[in-house]
Amino acid sequence: MGVRNAPPHAGSMLESLRGLGYALPTALADLVDNSIAAKSTDVAIHLEWAGPESWVRIVDDGDGMDDAALEAGMRLGARDPRAERDASDLGRFGLGLKTASFSQARRLTVASRRNGGPVVCLQWDLDLIGQEAGTEWPLFEGPAPGSEHLFAPLDFMEHGTIILWEKLDRIVTEGFAAADMIELADRIEAHLAMTFHRLLEGQQPELRVLLNGRQVKPWDPYLIGHPGKALESPEYRILHTIGVKVQCHILPHRDMLKTAAEQEAAAGPGGWTQQEGFYVYRNRRLLLAGGWLGLGDGGKPWPRDEAHRLARIRLDIPNSADAEWKINVLKSTASPPVRLRSQLHRLASQTRDTARRVFAHRGHITPVTGTRTNAAAETWQVRRSAQGTSYRIDRDHDLIASILNRAGSLKPDILALLRLIEETVPVQRIWLDTAEDKETPRTGFAGAPESEVIETLASMFEALVKFRGLSPPEARERLGRTPPFDRHLDLISALEVKETQ
Ligand SMILES: Nc1ncnc2c1ncn2[C@@H]1O[C@H](COP(=O)(O)OP(=O)(O)OP(=O)(O)O)[C@@H](O)[C@H]1O
Ligand SMILES: [Mg+2]
Image 1 (cartoon, rainbow, N blue to C red):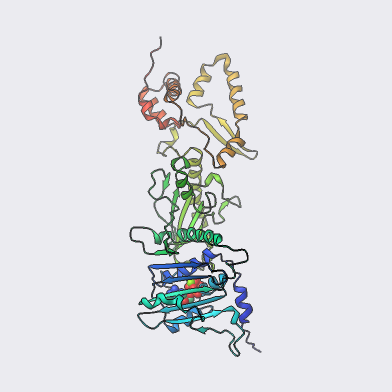
Image 2: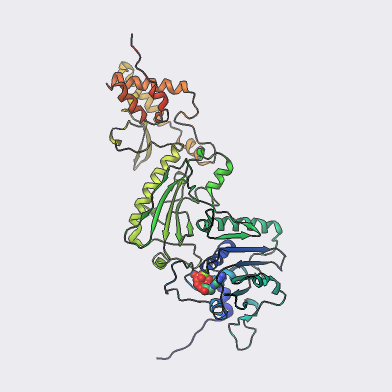
């Protein structure tokens, strides 16, 4: 059989790789991955705005590379993606350094020093591909003339690496001004704060990242320790996996976040609905922030919607599961293997249900106790059918049942009134008011004077004692479990049976 050697054309291959889909923040995160894999603790990113002379530089204090390692690292396909990696390695494809860099810049220079050895430096320049006779993939030694001074920090370091991007044709496009650079820096900061938050957290963080001299503060998607949180589950191990772990979180209702700044910080860089769902981490580095991994009901994936915006599920996977989870070169997607979907679906469904209740009840949900079956009825029942969802007032609700019992000839009128109320619930209006970032519609006696709560409570209490035959302690106990009165335990304990004349 005839065989041909068909290597790619260097020029067109490199140009095509520029279009993999990186944005500047994701490209920088890919380089920070490399720094972390090289055991860096400090990474300093500098964006220098100087028109066509602009540059971006990343200095890390990691192990660094010697000449051979640097040459290997500069090659496309530096490592075999099938090879087993160190458990803490964030790389997979042997491509990131090059693809991330070329997505933003036409020139990539890397200088490095290992163990106090000499500084080594190699450079790719897309404009010089095809210029050297006999060298199809020319890797130049040393920095480009005029850029030497940008590698000075390495003179004072025992080990570390400097990545320099120049000719930023994808960033500094026509009309790009200093103000755009500032906006860009903000986006980079938000992305790094989110992507590496677990490494940036704590009194003595494992990693410190400086962006133009300013320390990047971690963004915690889960508001760990916030007293208003409705759920912070234990960490579950997913069965039939090695090291896949899940923790479910439900964030506090907006009303429990005091200031606008606190609300905005909790929402996150993409806003509430964008940020709901699964957060997938690989070696504690975030790959995916939000979305429901294609899980859903009846063949339809769950959309990211307002009602479930308080649900965030932390999912950890090890790097040994990369192929199974279909990690991409950009480290921006991951997809659960089919065999794990039902377990994840179950956890996500439960979390979503609770999150929806918290969202609808201004953050207050009655703790679920073992005595659910004899818990007092909710006033409103939600009925879902093929025709759609409808809201009905429960005729067995203590107060309503007792009124109907005593209503006599008025009963048909009262039933008609209930029906009228049910048919005219201003659903659209409530939905709009809730969805728009306004004040949540008030329910559950929120903000009502105590006297109004007492009035309703007293009627309920009387109905329970006189018409349902409960003893006063039983009635008080029952009211204590009935929303929205369960928030007024002090008023309930003061309830007494009124003597009837
Ligand atoms: N900052 C750095 N410090 C030390 N070594 C580095 C650094 N950046 C890159 N390297 C070396 O260069 C190699 C190639 O990096 P590159 O990002 O292209 O691929 P990778 O990290 O192995 O895999 P991936 O494509 O998934 O990122 C790395 O495996 C590492 O050995
Ligand atoms: Mg990499």
